Image 1 (tube, rainbow, N blue to C red):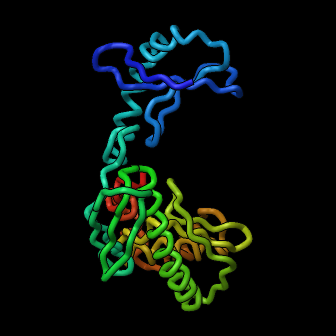
Image 2 (cartoon, rainbow, N blue to C red; image 1 turned 60 degrees about the horizontal axis):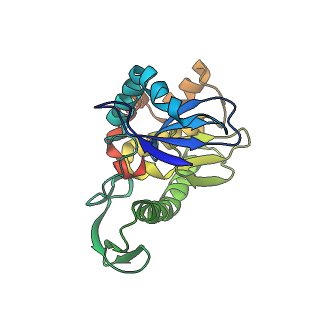
Length: 240
């Protein structure tokens, strides 16, 4: 069951979802779907507007935070960028959009990207994300292994993912996961993130010994850490 609703003038749009696994009413706010009121089977849908109204302050507060962070309101389809500025590897890929018949498809030609086919926002996003993952897989693992060799470290497996909250991560087995969004960072910041993960190969915590190792690998780590905290807007909103 899926219904759009508004409980009062100026309130956000929301959807009612019936979940067979739900045991109580919950509010879920996501960039993809916006505000959803998730209810168990048998719930009286006429009660939903009052629940939304009761949580209006919570909804407004979290919607404002997410809008500020991602550059668009939850539930609003992201606009397509004019191109992909992959600062980490010095590549700029202009993006042209040519709506037409057939399923969405991404064409790469002469240093440009072309999105053709039906205007399906999520399908287009997945196509661009697939391209970004392929470029990240070609760029980040070799760079990481180069840095590891210079640091005297041995890296296990290297994977590329689209993580929402981490630029990269290191497992206890020595596997390093690189976020494909690293490609949007300046080269110095990308290198710093990878060096940070290499330091975790010796120290799996954030102890003084860990930060000492980070300082050995990157003497300007404090400045890079501050820059990294402000780097979120460098990632295009369509990835949120």
